[in-house]
Image (cartoon, one colour):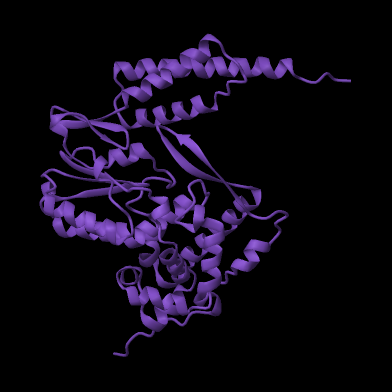
Length: 376
């Protein structure tokens, strides 16, 4: 029987047309720039890069090109190769229909946890490796047919990555990545860039997450659920859980893969936890063991903050104290309620949310009527 020949791609399939020079100069009235300054984010000070309108447009157009290129690979070569790039199965941060509650929900029911994170995740991204990955995505048809490339082989083969430097797209794309995505001093991704979370997830999926999933499958067991390891990554927070303890040898292999991807482990924040010894907080969502089952718990400090802000607003509502921030907190709490059976404390917080919604709606109507222009 004759061997089935691979479908020869059309020119569109072989080389996805993307010109960084055209993108940087198309319909931009001002120069795309970042404004970088130190800002306090939570309890930390971070160097935040705020894009101007032109830079936001560049990021939006590039995101559309990248989305089309990934989908094109799936249409021509099947969904297997692009499933992980489109779905990002291990990522729960900066992913549609996912958040830190979904991240915690995936680990509910396990007893032992290994939680760690990166030191300076965005600045640690190797822009050269990222550029080579983007070249492969945009010109995937060319390398898949000529050399039989796959994403997994590309991620583990330095020679395959180095071959991307001979592509005619490499040099202009490298310069584009440096201008449009790099942080201060051209190091890593800019914190605050619209595309930074998406590029971080792609980078981690190819060079880290896929390898960690393979390690978890190798060390776990589908037949023995006690040995099955669940792995998720919420931006820079990595969580591993299963029903038997995650030993030092496995943790050492995990740290080795993290280092190979170019990141550094934050040993100060790394924890090995047992849910039977107390509440385990996964991305600031508590997981408790109550009898025979584990349940999620909304963090007490966050609940106190929501109730405090809503009480303050209900006491002295003011349109200048914009309630958008409060609505964001409420949306987060309501998502949590959909995942759990509400306790009496949850019901009390929900009543505050209802009062706030009614009061803010009434105040907005009065405010708009007060400033309504007179008809002539």
